Image (cartoon, rainbow, N blue to C red; front, top):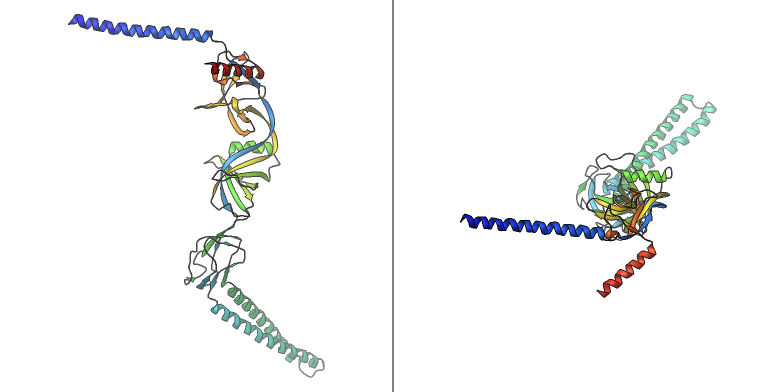
Length: 390
């Protein structure tokens, strides 16, 4: 029994040793093949600076320039409504009617009082004029003239007060027609016809203005600094474009005309605002969009071909050649895309050399063969021909 166990264990150990030997031999042969493999052919490009207009993207939200609650300015029963929810209305358009009879009567009474006092004042003026002639000839006492003068002045004051009351009554009568204070889109009607309303009833409805319209967006503080460095004092009326939620581009460009004076500590962003014309009411209050903001001034920045920038889980990288022409994996931070190039924010500078073609066969730290673009095209054609033969 023991003999069988020893034989079994010997077989297992021999199998393990044999497998280990094959693995070592395979690794040796593979390493030898790697050493004998010719260096891959690559093309190399030197990093240059280009003068570009910087652009920055950020999520934005459409916000009405005016958001107005329509309130009742007097008390009374809501008698009529002249619009439908969701309608577009004009400034000064009548939206509601508050029962006007009470205020119409008050205006009539105040008007009648004005007419009465006007007539009394006219009579008093005539009496005073006669008294002035008589007092000159000593036909009446000066005290009698002074009394008529005092009565005339009192009537003037009463008439002024009555006129103010009449104006106030007409103002209240005018408030029975509840009008839109701005052009815009009407929201939900909060108080329906037949209800009693007053200045404390709250909003009857809400109007959001639509043209022009604002878009607010948070710009990353690093992007804001880059934008400020580019524009310096020329930091007003920057061009802004919009991408709508469906991916389509809004046909009109806007102007960035406001920026906050602080960085939000919780988000590390600066709040910006752009104004857009919205003649067809395509932009709606509360809608989310993507904002593309352009600098006013061009700046010189290093750029790298899009095809030369690769990406893995750690981020974007390029193969940069060291002083011995050995490619090294170098991580970079890119800005926006400018044509066929990435703008490089970090990782590369003018004069650095990077691999632009033949990237698939490059191994960091291993030599490469630098060829011209013409030679690389020939190599590619030869490879295509060989693949067809196979």
